[in-house]
Amino acid sequence: MQRVEVDFGDGPERAYVLTQVTGGVAPGDRVVCNTTAVELGLGTGGWHVVHWNLAREEWREPGPGHVLKARYTSLQADVGSTEEHEAALVDCVSVGGMPVVAAGLHSQVPAVAAAFKDAAPGARLVYVMTDGAGLPLALSDLVAAMTDRGLIDATVTCGQAFGGDFEAVSVYSALAVARHAAGADAVVVAMGPGVAGTGTRLGFSAIEVGPVLDAATAVGGRPVACLRASFADPRPRHQGLSHHSATALGLACRSRVTIPLPLVGGAEEETLRAGVAAAGLDVRHDVVAVKPPDILGLFGAHGLVVTSMGRPAADDPVLFACAAAAGALAGELVFPTDPRAG
Image (cartoon, rainbow, N blue to C red; front, side):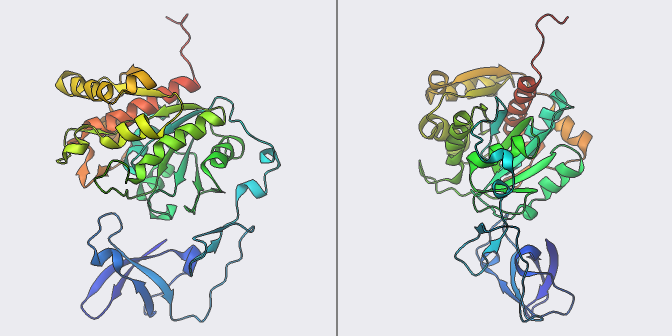
């Protein structure tokens, strides 16, 4: 990805170029931009996107296979897929008990990763990015930062998402790719930057957490659900246990999974427990109390600046404690504690 300035006549404005799709640009090039995100005042996607560089007549970048993403649009790109080239995946239907954490927000991934590496520093963690929000992995500064700091060992993009170290056609095959091609000991699955919500019970992209956990169960993984909870979000439907988690885990997830409940103490923990019970999650799933690590301290130690919905992590600590609890539990599942140890 290139970040550039474009000028429509009123001064410089920010834009980005997905070079895998359109090729690069140079200072002085005339470009065609998609300006919709800026016009709508979007947050995560609030940049112009360069659609074409008028300095060239054509752009061609042959892909490694025959699997298209962004297909049936003028921007469809041949990215191939790992499944096409890995013999070990031909008949693969199992990930051999690998822990799989499913989260509904991209901003929770660094908390999962930092806590996982704190609990299991020698283990490999792979991030599977779904197509529930932003499609280009290059758009995520968080992934770049986590990769640089060794918190994520490889990335897989699945569905219509693209740009990972490995490409996969579905969530199911992405888990197999992570395990058998990327050498994962554990996986965190979440959409890319951005999330869609409508304020309705079913109309939100993070409902995919349910099917992701079902996929993990189907291929023999250890499904771990990352809760979304907040005591800083002004919207009532996201206060305490978010309705996103209540619906994704209470309605959309059909298998029995493990839900780490972070021990944050006080009234916040009581409210979170009450929300889990009210949604019936403690009946349908296995709720496990987990003491999360000091996730804000871990962010600081790794030099990570993490925000969610425009709020710094310190302003919404329970949201990240939920993710840290999931990451810590996944680390314990990779390296279970020996009960005989002192």
